[in-house]
Image (cartoon, rainbow, N blue to C red; front, side):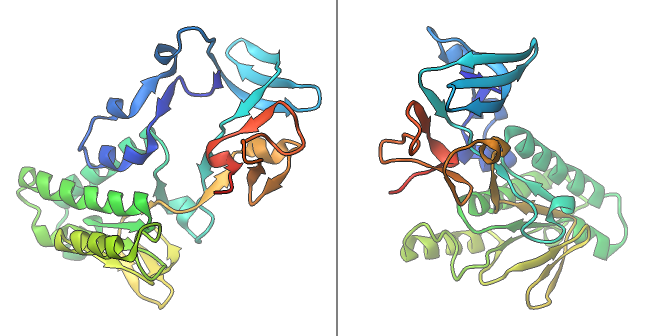
Length: 274
């Protein structure tokens, strides 16, 4: 097993780490601990030659090449922040445990700063957290944030409830489009009842350091934008000579890569037909 990280991350629960519902170490499992009869190599794969059946990785001991009979690509994907102008410069992605901890610490710093500021407009901007994306990650992040803010506010006596707000933006007609309409409506109502300003059919047009501008010109003053939309392929996929559609490796129903015996792809890097 070759991996840049020495641990596996359960990504679906990253929002819970943002809201401090769980500890970050509960999201990860050490790879070496899970493996008993396999070898783990900590390194970055930078070249795969399916014809010669070799893979090259950069490791702490330099570049090493391994021959293989079968190679399984489980490369995942990466955050993409160029979908909306300003996202790359001002938004916080949520893809790793490090991202979750950074967002949590940013939220705590914002609330702590509110107590020290005297300008009402600045205080409201610092306490306004905007989440872009109404899929699973966005909905869970917004819910965790609003619950977290409600639970910690008592430790900040100079901050009023009106100075803390969470807005969820989704450009579709309803949140959680992956689920049935009934469940989507239930999730929307649950968030709204807990204080989240859920805005559907609301597309972010620009994200700045002081505001998010919507497609209809509405300006939302905020100091913190969290982005849960947009993915891009692992750069290795773009460099490999493999069939690709939409940034994903084309596989057969058994997950073997089309036309390349001994090569397999799984997870977010593969174009798996349901």
